[in-house]
Length: 309
Image 1 (tube, rainbow, N blue to C red):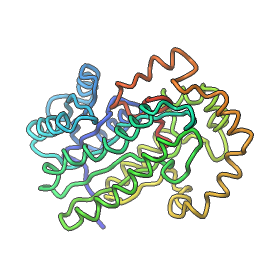
Image 2: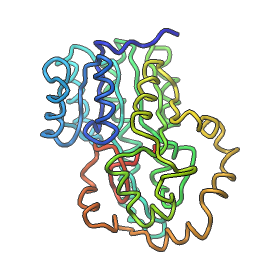
Image 3: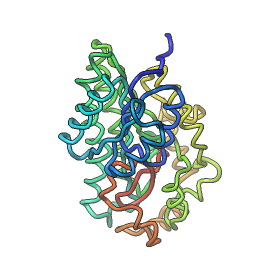
């Protein structure tokens, strides 16, 4: 199959000012793509667009993935500005990290609304613009779709749901020439992921994410893998590739991963020290307000997701 040339194509990214969103914007612009950048913070996304060249190559738009109407307006504005939309990356997401017994039910529902329904809304708003150009829709899911950590029920459910939803939509759109894929990075270093590492419950579960099963991969590895997947119009993008077998046959590896990675004593300690209402560190909490529905990059009680992904 020939590569999908990104030069001159218009790429939409939700959550573009977050850790992964920003890195993807840089990488795609370097490949010659034009960028429609969507975020809740209009001032920040406008500044980001200017740094990437502004004018005819990059422009910021306000949108909230919880609101289909705002996404439709942003997509229409982007299509009018650039003349076409070719690729849409549903990157926005949040996370929680608390046990089911104590997690605020509203926090659980918010993760599902943003991470799962938000992808559906993004694709729905984009389709009328992408379909005429036989474009490509990509959702940023996570290895959490296949490896299900304790204290992460809402996050893992949302990411597994994104994976399944993309497969379903892909079959619907295949005859129209529109590609649909999901990207599944493991833990990746972002400012928000630093907060996960600093949190006591996160350290208890994943040991600081510096070795073994939970070791973080460098951001350039993640962005290169995703860009390569876009150029292949891939159905599924696994990062790093060494985890491909785990992603392809998660049931076969589940018992082994749980036995090695989540020992009962460590899980109980994490539950005991987890905060049901947010981060232990007040400075981290201030960075993770529930209103940040488009940041797309790490954490706990509605926070920008850790694209471990």
